Image 1 (cartoon, rainbow, N blue to C red):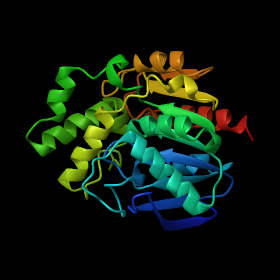
Image 2: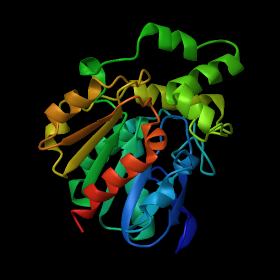
Image 3: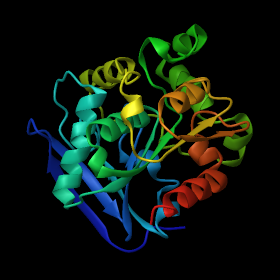
Image 4: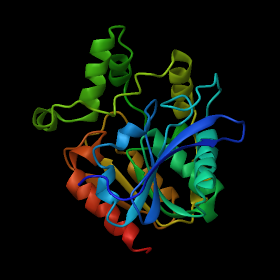
Length: 268
């Protein structure tokens, strides 16, 4: 599918005045798509149009990324959630569906907790509750990502995102490997925000119907986090995608997209 319908690129301003670039595509009920750590809105490029049959999609370049401001920080997932609301306010949207993956899923948790009246349905992908209750990536993964050689670290990240078979059939370029225009302080800010996330105590306050998705071969955010989230969020539904790594939403695009679309359509 390709983008169709309305297109709008504009700027919202956060509570502290930070400029946030945001993008609206398509027509229909609003669906906010939240990207992973240190990524801009292009994270969603491969799959965004799959939701345009019934939704308009809204993305933003989270502070520190893309075409918006890149303040020194500190950053937090709670602050990113407040930024999402600033974008909705700028677009005149009172209520929306929210789909967040990876760190975007952490941000989405806070949006649903802090602004329940603004979230109709919630989808959380390849994410975790954070804090001491979360299942963290192993030390081998951390070492691979921290390699001094940028090319080797990027290859390690690509391997964590996609299975070898999928990569062979889809050689890229990939838009989920980080925003190349981010300054170092913003990258550190995103890392600290993601690592500092802990919504465990407040997850039972989520009132929006929730769908939780994960690849069962995800080593970046282990899939054992899925049942942890499901146990904390009332009446959450779950789905594991066999063989998929962190970017299940691309690798299992047809199945995941259809599942999300069907789940969101129940509320229309």
